[in-house]
Image 1 (tube, rainbow, N blue to C red):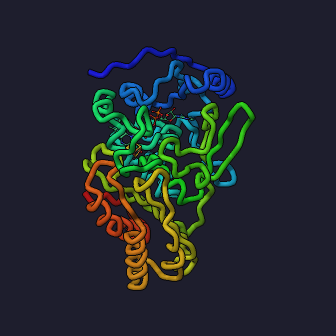
Image 2: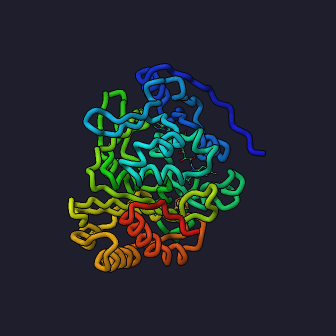
Image 3: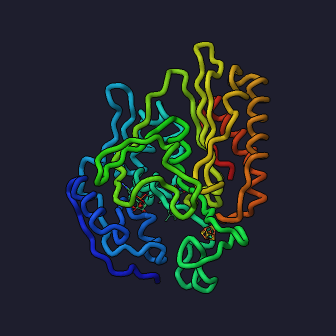
Length: 340
Ligand SMILES: Cc1cc2nc3c(=O)[nH]c(=O)nc-3n(C[C@H](O)[C@H](O)[C@H](O)COP(=O)(O)OP(=O)(O)OC[C@H]3O[C@@H](n4cnc5c(N)ncnc54)[C@H](O)[C@@H]3O)c2cc1C
Ligand code: SF4
C-alpha cells in the first residue's frame, strides 16, 4: 500500500487567508480541492507539499448559480456531481454538463471539484506511476529526471491535458477568476493553458482559482461532449471532444466550435469548424457532409502521442470518428457520446 508522506494541513476560512498561506509557503504548499488527483500524486511523490491548504472550509467557493445577466458562475469548490446534475447547466450549457457527467466515477465526482478539474496537472503513462516504477526508469524530465520517454531526445515535456471539463468550458467561451497576492484577475480559459507539459497553466502558484464564469448561450445553442476511454465507468480520456453549435431562427448553423483534449498539453481548438458547418442545417445531408469534412480535418491535424494509455494509432483512427459523432449528437440536441 502506498502511504502519504507527512504534511501540515491548513484549513483557512477565507480566500484571503488561503492566498496568504499559499504565498507564504510558495513551492512548499499546494491547494486542496477534493484531493482526488492531488492525493494520489502525493503518494506517487510527484508533488511533495509540506503544507496542504484545504479549501473546504471557505463557503464562498462552493456556489453554483446563474447570475441576473445569464452568466453561469461555478465556484471552484463546486462538486463535479452537482455541476453534472444541475438542470439549468444541462439546458443552457449541455457540453459542460455532459463532460462533467463523464469525469471519473460517481464517488470521484462527489469528491472532485470543478476547480480541481480545471487546475488538473497534465498526465503521462511514464509519469503517473509509483516513485519506485519511475526510479527504475531513471525518472523523466517532468519530474526528477532529464529524459523524455515519449519523444526520444525531446527537450520539452508533452504530457497530456486530461481534464474533461476543459474543452467543454473552452467551447462556450468560459473564463477563470483568480485571486492572488496582487488581487483579482479574470482571464479567458483559452489563455490559461500553455503547451508546456511540466506546468500547462499561466498562473502563479499563489493564485487561487475562485470561480469559472460561463457566458449565457442563445436560444439556438446546442452542444455535446464525446469521450473515448478504456472503461466507461471511470477512466481518464484517451480523447475528448466538445462541440458548440449556435443556430439561427431558421435552424441553420450561425457559428460553431470544436475543442479536443488528451492530444497535447493543452486543450486544442480545431480551426475551421465554423467555416465548414456554417450555413448548414443539422439533420440535412449538407450538415452530414460538413461534419465529415470537419472530422477528416481533425484526423489530418491530430498527432496522438504514446503519452497516455492506449495505442496512439488507434487513438488517431478514432479522432475523426469521435469528432463526427459529437458534431452529429450536438446537431440532434443529444449526447454525450461515448463510443465504447
Ligand atoms: C481513478 C481516477 C479516474 C479519474 N478520471 C478522470 C476523468 O475521467 N476525467 C477527469 O477530468 N479527471 C479524472 N480524474 C481526476 C480527478 O478526479 C478530477 O479531475 C477531479 O475533478 C479533480 O478535482 P479535485 O477537486 O479532486 O482536485 P484536487 O486533487 O484537489 O486538485 C487537483 C489540482 O488542482 C489544484 N487545485 C485544486 N483546487 C484549486 C483551486 N481552487 N485553485 C488553484 N489550484 C487548485 C491542486 O493543488 C492540484 O494541483 C480521475 C481521478 C482518478 C483517481
Ligand atoms: S511527456 Fe516525457 S517528460 Fe513529460 S511526463 Fe511524459 S515522459 Fe515525462
